[in-house]
Picture 1 (tube, rainbow, N blue to C red):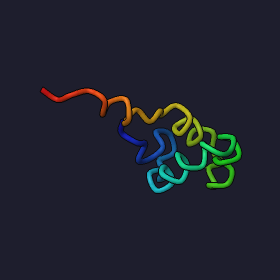
Picture 2 (picture 1 turned 30 degrees about the horizontal axis):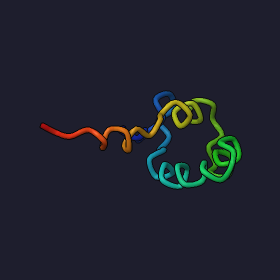
Picture 3 (picture 1 turned 180 degrees about the vertical axis):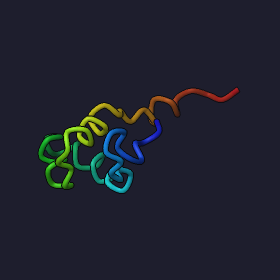
Picture 4 (picture 1 turned 45 degrees about the vertical axis):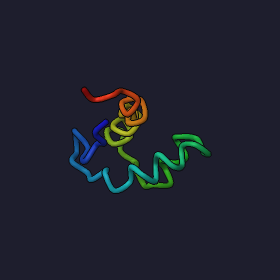
Amino acid sequence: MLIPIRCISCGELLADKWERYQAQIKIKEKKQVLDELGIKNYCCRVCFLTSPDLTDKINQYKII
């Protein structure tokens, strides 16, 4: 899955926070992780919460 590079609404850079977000949501609540990363705007939070990481599921399929 393509990660969000910038917020769709405000244009804030989000890609640099994606890996830390994915690592932290395994041990903490999503709200707490977003707060710690400094993502305060609702539009930016929505970009993170609605972008699932489907890389593992996609990698299960064989390319023909």
